[in-house]
Length: 335
Image (cartoon, rainbow, N blue to C red; front, side):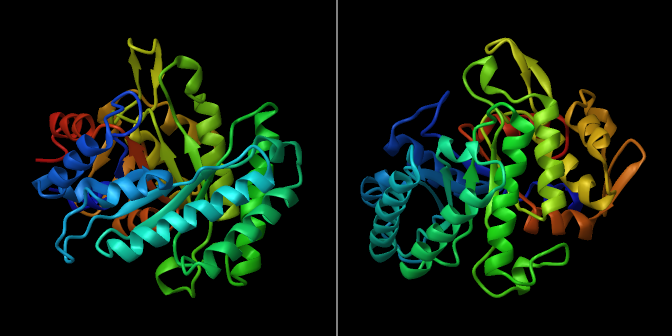
């Protein structure tokens, strides 16, 4: 297998079998994840996505062996207001603490939560920053200050302004807690805590749940410019953008978004170039070599791919692990 493929896609797929359209029960989803961890394609696998509210039940299903590593993403309860949101964070942290105490082999490696909708009415990002500051303080107090956090925001109209305000709020928070945060920041050499990030929902069960290509490209551009890490969730079952008859709309491809994020950094793509990658329909235009990837005339080195995956474009949640790897095998990108 080409090193560029493994670098771009290693650990990208956070398994979300609990969620639609798969919507398995917890025992079935946990059994799948345990099986995937032992398969040759486990290098594609990231973490098990689970609501913190279900951690007590999850703990009963995990392997007894203390050396059996079972990485988890904690999905927060959220809340309609800032006060309700922070109350949810307190409950989530209590559940995370209980899981850590009972199952040290199941580390919480990330926390994801949706921001209250009323925060999007504040266009300067100050309300978002204040909420993130308060959340960070709670995580630090609970001993989870080293866990990365990703905040999802609805793409409410006017969506450009709402995206800018949320990303600006995240960036301001990151600058506050990490004075050296910026284009040369490195997670692996930085003091803790890690920077907060933006979570983009890229699909769902109906056509209206899929953001436009313009929205996806804009988020990638804005996160790049603000040096804010990002991750994706939902709808990215296939490598390349395609029409899906079940939802009667175009589905985004995970190769599209990760190559777009990579070239946004490596080739300093502007919005229209990023949009071109996000909208690409021809799988053959994505080329991989021993130590590079390319799209049209733009390329990224193995070091640039590694940097983006480690620092900027982390992973995507998918209720299916089979569809992505079957498609990649059909494209002869993986064995």
